[in-house]
View 1 (tube, helix red, strand yellow):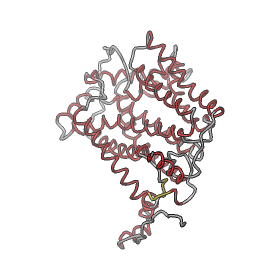
View 2 (cartoon, helix red, strand yellow; view 1 turned 180 degrees about the vertical axis):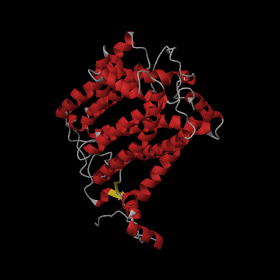
View 3 (tube, rainbow, N blue to C red; view 1 turned 60 degrees about the vertical axis):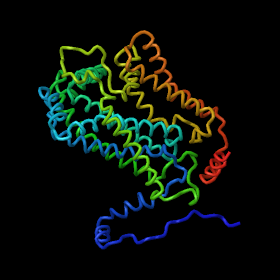
View 4 (cartoon, rainbow, N blue to C red; view 1 turned 90 degrees about the horizontal axis):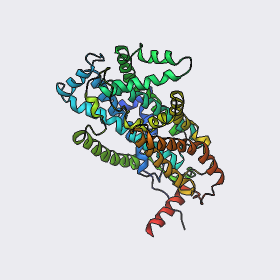
Amino acid sequence: MTKKKHPQRPSRPLYDNPVSKWIDKRLPVFTFIRHSLDEYPTPKNLNWLWNGGSLAGITLLIMIISGITLGMHYNPDPADAFNSIERIMRDVNYGWLIRYIHVNGASFFFILVYLHMFRSMYYGSYKAPRELLWIVGVLILLLMMATAFMGYVLPWGQMSFWGAKVITNLFSAIPVFGDSIVQWLLGGPNVDAPTLHRFFVLHYLLPFLIVAFVAIHLICLHQFGSNNPSGVEVKKSEDQIPFHPYYTVKDLYGLTIYLLVFAGFVFFAPNFFMEAVNYNPANPLVTPPHIAPEWYFLPFYAILRSFPDKLGGVIGMFSAVSVLFFLPWLDRSKIKSAAYRPMFRPLFWVFILNCLILGWIGQKPPQGWYLIIGRLATLYYFAHFLIILPVVGWLERPLTVPSSISEYCKREHNRRKK
């Protein structure tokens, strides 16, 4: 019985016109695109969860274009910042649309990145040989947080002003250098014009630094290729298919669905992710009854408030992100995919639930049962990484892992037929 081979696309000339040939000989950009996208070998069992990376990249591009356009009309001056936002909304042609795209794009960007990271945690995409790929991804998350925080200050509404005041004041808890760091961040003793100017400049420049890290992220990805739902490395040519047209079509389908959902929020619920109090101009003399950051910061804000003192809260908040850098070494199991890890799989969903609880607690006042629940959830967050993952990797007896991606596909096909 002859072995069935995967159909290959017919070869075609590298370049169809002399102009492309002339350019590529001097600057091999077309060869790079061909190798990186067209001929890039990809595991043949990737599912829809692998759309997150490309969707996040497109969202980053949308954010940069809309941000540059908004920056042309924004005035980073405390006396006019709030009014300049209102002028963009009312007087600039399609200014309302550009701003709503930018504001909602920030939330959708974090949604995609969080889903992308949770998918990587479930399928073990942070394990060898992709540790550096994961670390660069965490660095991108940190840059996103810094960019989003500075962008939230720019509208100069009540929540923008007081959010900047509260968050920057946290650094004063750092021994010896704390007050100097706060003064450097603010550009003076208080949140004022120098603060707004430097936040505007940094918010404008940091996305381009994110693009640079995304490029490094892609280089790391192409070094060993994508992980896949089976967690099995590619061992033979039958396990792979070219990225184009198989996954370009898949990504375009996912992009279509994503843009429809995104447009639904932009046109029908543009303020869904925004705080109503931020539509009031900043007033240093009136403190909002409840100061809370944007939703994507709420779990870390809950961890911050779970500690009884300011310094402990700052250390806890930064440790909640820093612990992610060490995830490839904290998880000692050799098995990547949670599908074959009977102990890890339910604990992963408990961790997801715990993160949702932290997000819910982050928007509640730090008192009574809310404070107790927040402290328990914070304790479990760190226990998951520092205790549960190492112990589970030692005690767990994994299921039988397929010998190849092709065997995995056969198993899945037979399971669905049943």
